[in-house]
Amino acid sequence: MGTMVIKWIKRTLIALGAALLLALLLLLAGNAWVLAQTRTYIEQPLSQCRASRVGVVFGTSNWTRSGVRNPHFHARMHSAAELVATGRVEHLLLSGDNRTQAYNEPRAMWRDLHRRGVPAEKMTMDFAGFSTYDTLARAHEVFQLDEAVLVTQYWHLPRAIYIARAMGMEVTGCLAEAPAPIVGEWRLRIREWLARVATLGDLYLWGRAPYFLGPAEPIVIPAEPAPVAPVALPETPGTR
Image (spheres, rainbow, N blue to C red):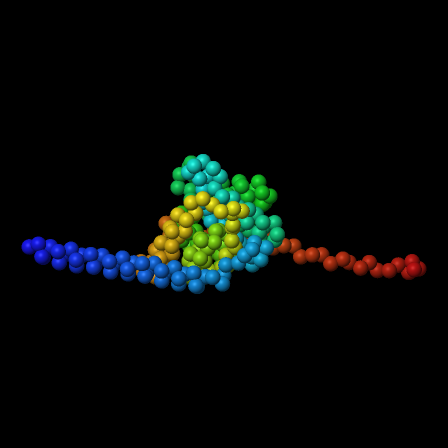
């Protein structure tokens, strides 16, 4: 009896070890694939970001759990405002979570960017960007965007770019970098490693659907008025 139990334990441990090894290989392979496919579409520094009519800004809380201003939020808002100020982007799609009345990422982004000088008519809010996948699905299907520049942190951009391009969008990524290292960012990086692999499943295995789409709301950007050429006045005889 004791020998059978030992054999069973050994087989169980071998099976668990094999499963963990397979999971690790899938994690490494999935991340390597996403990073390799998106590397050429990430541009830095901010002054070299490719021009696009619309920039998609991903939502995050403007405050951390410890009650201090979220440096990731600040970096995204700074980069988005600079893109508009320098003329690299004409319009911003602010997409984030608004599950409750007390938590409204798009509204917080709108207010912050408006204080930074971005005109109200250059911003559109998306209140159903509950995840990166939802934000990009709605950007493509609801707001009818075929191309855009994505504004977020470097650890988030590969997954965002991969999703957008898999959906048929022509996108590039513009880094929103904090001025100093951020405490605890390693947790976000670990979570992002897992999220990249989950994204491959969303796209190619179980066909994830956005939480909410709704009717199309195309972003319409007014065309810039054409410059008026000066009119040459006819010369009056005898004026020379």
